Image 1 (cartoon, rainbow, N blue to C red):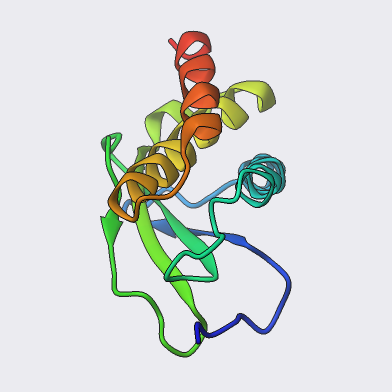
Image 2: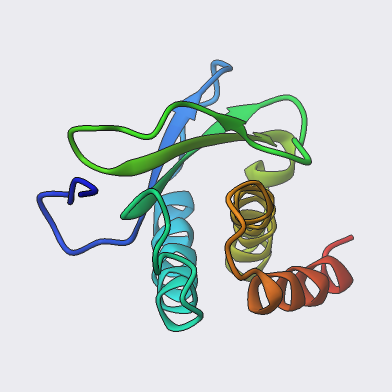
Length: 139
């Protein structure tokens, strides 16, 4: 049986700074909106149904490049999550408007979820369609 988290979340997102730039309050607000939106999608599309993990955590790494794929850790046996990490170029966030922040975060989180979905044979069609839409809106 797969371990369950001590909460009802199916998508957890945390922030890690790889540079001296610290996250601004508006970054966290945008990230919370993205988490809530994408969490409902992974629930509604069956992404987690019969998966070897009960939820996904993604560490957003504030760095100097944009990753195209996430790094993976082993599925957490105690809490049941699949830990992923993906780097975002901090320079793109510093002067971004709220709607731009959401697009930047959505792109990174979707890339991580789609990549992991392929690795674990999860349904990714809805996530991939959303990623295509986001890529069309980001410069």
